Image 1 (cartoon, rainbow, N blue to C red):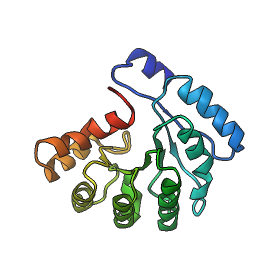
Image 2: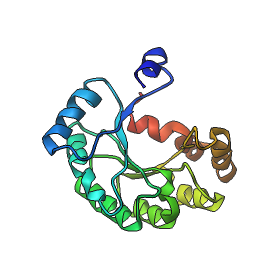
Image 3: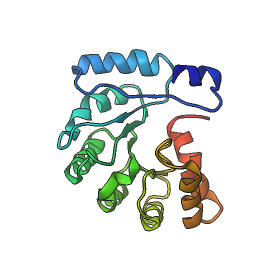
Length: 189
């Protein structure tokens, strides 16, 4: 990551995954030194074990201490529907932290869309969407909190972009999904 950021800072931004088994003080220090101190733009992707989404709370607290620092949490397996509900509750406790659920919530995409729709400062990233309807519904329900994603190298960025373009018309919503919203979250002014 460091090599890519150094070589192409105009093209790449950095997010750092933080081990969830650290003590809260260690998490806070890591965010301070390794995320903020290095000029990275967010935290993630975090993958707590199934049924243990609450483990991200110290990360959310550290992110809150640094303003609107986005946190990305893995949305597909091992994340469960109960984990998504826990994430929504945590997002409510840390309203200044944009909490991004990646991979459209995986097999729980319907629940993820509903939770994001009903939880301010919670966002959906679209990679690994199984069906075009899920992408269409996510964008319809949360147009300003849905982010393009391809899960490359496992997914195909061209196909993922084509799916977004297929379910949106040219204009503001498409532009936000394809980059405007993440630019805003990552403060790429």
